Amino acid sequence: MNQPKLNEALKKNEKAINAFSGENDDDNIERFFFQKDSIEFYIGYVKKYLDNIELLKKYDKNVLFTITGTGPRVNVNLGLGLPLKLVKEPDNEFDSDAIAVYAEGKKIGYVANKEYTKFELTSSASDLHDKIQDTAQAEYLCYLDKFLIQFHTGRII
Image 1 (cartoon, rainbow, N blue to C red):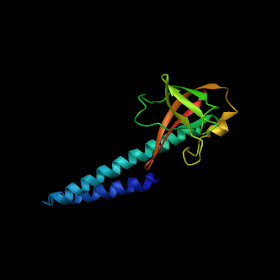
Image 2 (tube, rainbow, N blue to C red):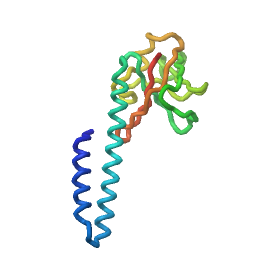
Image 3 (cartoon, one colour):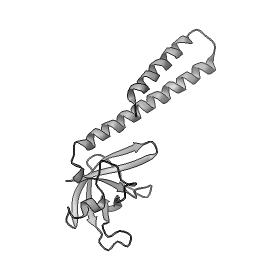
Image 4 (spheres, rainbow, N blue to C red):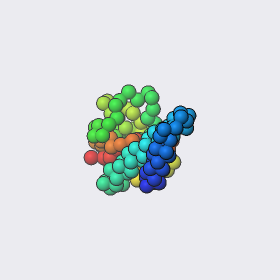
């Protein structure tokens, strides 16, 4: 994600928009304004992503985890600092290292346990399994959206 290139594109677009002043080419002006809005959206998108990366880098990877299995069925407003509870599920039929994640008394997902389901700066359920008791307190940190791949993250406290 290259924010300087996006900023450069925005400046070029604004220069092009200004070049149209006084002309009657409404379609071109509208197109350039649409491009400007798109570039500004992606600048904000990249900034938020990079800010969340910096947040994760403040913590040791050994306390960070990705929450998987969240979806529309989760009726909890996930936000920074939301208390979470991790509960080991040794009898889980799919994964003996499974760790369920609860918020507001509801199961909202699991600690990701596969490389393709977890964010690179976080630990897997297998990594955390022997480091926590049967339950552990945690908190929600942030939502990372990396161009169509989404990660909810938390940390053990």
